[in-house]
Amino acid sequence: MPEKNPFSPEAQEGMSQLLADADMRAKSLRAEAQRAEQVRDIWNRLFNFMNKGWYLHIQVLMDQERKLLHDLREQRDPAVRYLEEIYRIAKHEGANVLKRFPTHLEAAASAAGLSIDKESRHPKYTVDDKFFQLELDDRKGTVRISDYEGQLTELPADVGAVIEAVQHERSRVLERPFDREQFLGKLRRQYLGIVNKDGLTDGDAVPIRRITARLGKNEKGFRTDEFAVDLSRLVEQGPAEIDGCQLELQQTKDISQGMLLRGAGGRGYIGYIKFRRTQNA
Image (cartoon, rainbow, N blue to C red; front, side, top):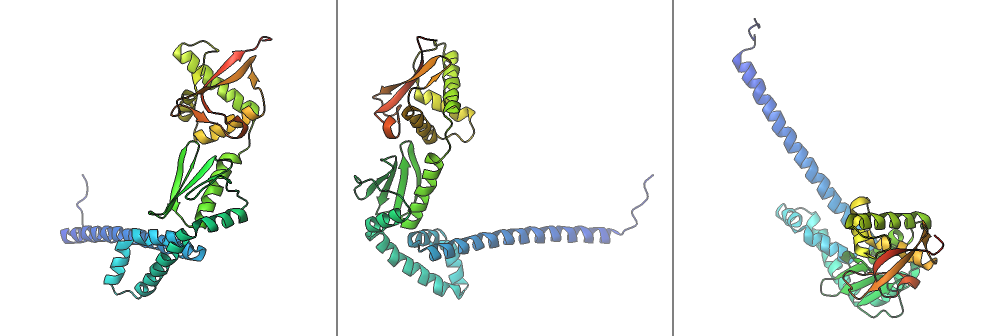
């Protein structure tokens, strides 16, 4: 038989209330700490943008944080005085960024070792033989960066930030190591998988977008623009043969289903691939 609880009901009820109060206080402090971290992140980003001279980024951030700035005004926080100065200067300098964008972009690109294609005309610019496209939207104050496979990012049009973004995408897409045999083997396996699934014959043409869709499901981190560059490299290096079969690419007039290759391989939209058995196989 369990022993009778020796503590009085008042003591038990009192401890229950203390525990409930402590839980509530802990939750409140956690929420307060989380909000403090969020505010710290905002000030850190703002200070970083100030140091880099990214005036349009400053405007966007401060516009996004209107409520925080409103609360500071309501609290008569002394920080409001210089925050308003920062916003005022950022707005003025941001207008100059847009006005002088073509000149500053060309200079910044040259300093970074990037070459703007000579055919570029404001507000649209291309890099790497038109593989990357940059389009300035004066009204929104943003630049949209795309490549052959679609939009990559859109960001405030501070030239330094645009150059950083282009360099990041160039590194991701163009500066990866390329293993010809490994890529060709992967291409062959995906092709055979589709042929077998669809009841086709080895040697039949398969839509290129079926290949990329299958890779997108089977390969973690797959990106179609990286695939297009690797296929371009494969084409540029000459005839590709595996298992006694030679890779062949067929063009299409259906732009939505085709894929543009880069460099020497970029002659029209590639719509289909197939592996043709060679005579010696």
